Length: 282
Ligand code: FDA
Image (cartoon, rainbow, N blue to C red; front, side, top):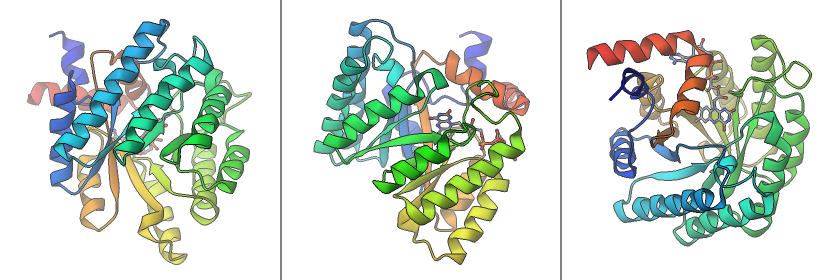
């Protein structure tokens, strides 16, 4: 195993679906829910995209068989979005249909701005047929307020995050403060006017004021959950769960981890030191 692979272990559950299941079981024992992500993106052959959807169907079967508390998160570029959006929608529909049969849920992750609109289009097509599918909105994009208002009209299940891709200032807030401000505004909009929201952040500057807002407005715990990434702020995840909050952790696994790992490293140089510390501690 190379040095990078060892570093990545801090943020990735392992290489196989069984590694992911073991990680989910550990989280569940601490009262934490999960969403499983089979790592991969930018697939350019129909065979690979079909195989990727087949793997998700196996994950859903495995979740059902083991009884762990987890749904799944899917990236559309892994499902053939860059080949043909209709092919991609059909491919993902197989996963959503399987999840529906098993009483489970599929989250469509949001990727870079080149695919924002087409991701929303595919999502809307899936949502017209299935109610067990949700989407992600990134607070760094200027367009997101309009997207949230439209999605709120249909009470769509939204995961709200800040956004992890490098975007130009023409379409995304370049300053962290503006991204944070947008996050708080969009979160409050969904909490008061929308459907269920997954508040995906590790940032206490987001968590504390939103917690206060939720209390002040008497928003029921069934309307929202906190979401964090595997290996990041584990103590905070457990503390929130112990306080009676619903917490869901994003559990990525698989050999195609470079894109995911690089985004974690770009977000925060401390993540790099974390990974190192974990590596040296063993
Ligand atoms: P941010 O990086 O802004 O840091 C703010 C503060 O949070 C820090 O100062 C620190 O206090 C705390 N913090 C952050 N990282 C920490 C760490 N490692 N250790 C300790 N404290 C830390 N993105 C996307 O574009 N599309 C998607 O579909 C998703 N999906 C997704 C799912 C889930 C469950 C999560 C949590 C995140 C995503 N993301 C995502 C990633 C997201 O957009 C964002 O890049 C990261 O969550 C980082 O933003 P934060 O709000 O967590 O903190």
